[in-house]
Every structure is written in C-alpha cells, then in structure tokens.
Length: 136
Image 1 (spheres, helix red, strand yellow):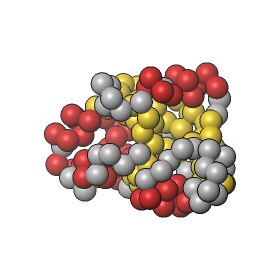
Image 2: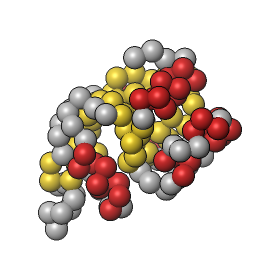
Image 3: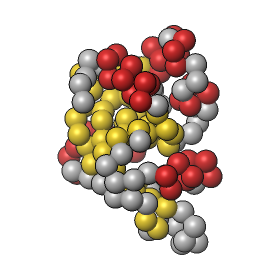
C-alpha cells in the first residue's frame, strides 16, 4: 500500500528524517488519519509532504513497523508507526501542480487537505514519481 504523510518542515523535515535514519510517526489525533495509520503494514511506501509555506511532496520513505501503541498517547487508543527515509524526489512536486492536474481530482490531498495521513493509489503514486523525476 502507498501513503502520504504530512508534516511542517519546521517541526520535522524530510532532511531531519534522513539525518535521524528513522522516526516514530506519533501524535496523530485525527480519527480518520488514525484509521489510516492502523492500516499501515511494514514495508508500505510513503510520500513525505511538507506543509506550511512549502506545500510539496519532497521525499520517499518506507514503513518500518506495523502500528504500535503511540507512546505520546496516555489513553492508549492511538497508534504510531516507525518510518525510514528512502530518498528525496528528483524535484519537489507542489500542491499547486497536483491541483492543476485533473487526474488528481480524487486524491485525498486535494479533497481533504487537512488530513495528515492518507492513502495514495498506485496510479497516483506513479504520476507523482514521474512529476518528481524519480524512479522507485
């Protein structure tokens, strides 16, 4: 399965992920984003998206674990996953580019822009990699 994870680059950028080698994706509170996190399996592919001023997909990552209890959640209801970087895209793919293409009309990034974890179809994944001048 393919996913898109969103984060403010000032909070935790793709470069931070590369530097650290892996991180626990925790602190997700939105119920739909949590449902998506619960569906992730080890080995799933991830598009890393910078929110805020950047608004672009900048890198590729991989899920290194199945969901586990989120250590940041004292209630024990939320989950987190460990992710690791693969590589940056050849060039960032901006939200403006994605919105300008009708082939992304059904993409959750366009339809539900505030969602921090969302599925990405195989076709959308291929289109984004092509736009980002990246091969898998």
